Image (cartoon, rainbow, N blue to C red; front, side, top):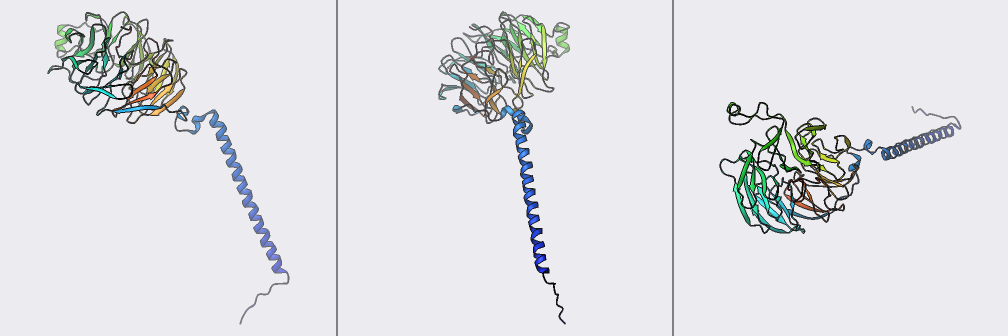
Length: 440
């Protein structure tokens, strides 16, 4: 039997009206929710914009100064066949010189065209240029070459079975008569005209850092666990720390024929101020200052476990800049107090900064070439494939030359002028890498 459901008259109409009201209410709730979400989202967005403008680092995984920095225009590239670690050198005629681990010294003109290459054997240390334009290099086997500006050999000396087979990247210094560089465990004075060894000094040397010549003529270099200073005859004038007890035959015999090492290890080469005060990076601790007499003056501490192998530089106003292994570029007053520090975000820095005429600091870290203002603001940056260990150089027309770890030599169009006229504006002071506080 069929069962029929009968509705009272008008019930269907009331049900339809109720359903319509429920649907309308649901639509209103959805609209309200959508408007609420839009309102909340707008508040968050506006808040992020306002706060971000005041503190942009709060919403970035990188330092704010790394964003929206203009690139430095590239002019050209040249590719060597090996890694370039040593500093670049620039001749008075604009020729750029690079020493590579592929065994060649490269000479390029200002357009990036190869002028010649000289086979000297694998090299880590960079070239040094004499007053007459002769180029001096030392290979990994401590064979020392003098190369004419035309790319021909002038003389060669050193090397041999008793040479140190781990030369490292220690940079030579040069004056009017001698090249100062290590050979067979001692600092040597090598006559520029003939290549003859004139005198040895000290006992042992550190494989990094640099030889430097102070304004008074003292030659300072990194010994084994100490800083050594000798005069123009190779006689030791002072050491830091002082060897105590003094070196004797018994001391040498008891130490296997080697002088005992000190406990003070330089991490970088030096930078020399006009008054002879010099500065250097120290392993795991920061920057240290010495008087020209060898007296310890002060030490600035960086972050712990920072490898400080990049040489410091000195501006015309006495400000000291140095790049630390903690990833920061520091600016210090001459008394050792910090002016500012900027995190460049590139990790360990082995490349020495350089100073342009207008005070801009160019700095190559593990990832990029960066331009920083004298106030510590990042002005520009450009990525460098393979990273940089070689210290760059700066032409009088403002062109920046950088050598990458991948073997590329790159020229960039700088806009801040040539090298600053200051006591020590770049690696080994000048475009020739002489390491000499007073010019020729």
